[in-house]
Length: 108
Image (cartoon, rainbow, N blue to C red):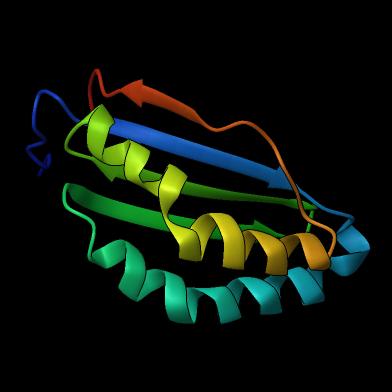
């Protein structure tokens, strides 16, 4: 069954790269940061879904779905995300790439 999303829904994609030889460190750091990121992000209005993944190929991605582009922008100012987690991830060699935010045209 297809989930019903608001017509104003947006997807936010935040990619990053790291040396694949550091996968274990990055994966562990990702797990640690989830301990404080999950409760912080869950408190933000408009969140529909949030996914985070780390691959042994040296890439990681956070994908979130929001009810509006304005609500998706809350992550830009979330201290737990932009200061604390970013610092922890950069300490293990993660390089962040610019995020993209798109309106959702269709979904399955």
